Length: 148
Image (cartoon, rainbow, N blue to C red):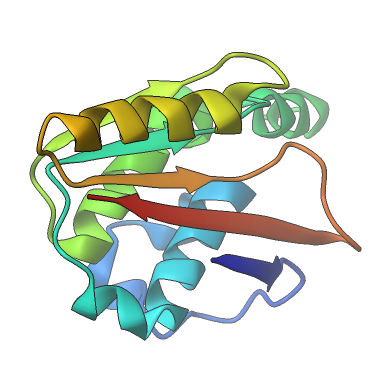
């Protein structure tokens, strides 16, 4: 599945009560939450044993924005890290399993999908969430695959 998230909307999202300090999320974390909120059909998917988080640009874009804003607070910087994306996925899904944050440069998303396919071969249900580093028409793209 693919969803593009408009990052210009700064109003409080419908899912804000599910995520602690949602207003401090970087654009990737915010986009994952918005996508999970809109993807109601994930409720019908088999719950994952493992999730692969595929971020080809890692947190580089958010780190760049953080530095250019002149911000110096570690409390704000921490919200640009990939583990925060994993944390908000946990909160939105009520998930408490394994999450692997993978990065293989431009091949990150395909690498994560391959890893998930291997997990599925061993009887695990594996989900992949990805977000390419480049915006599409000033919108953040969020991708999802499920392997069983």
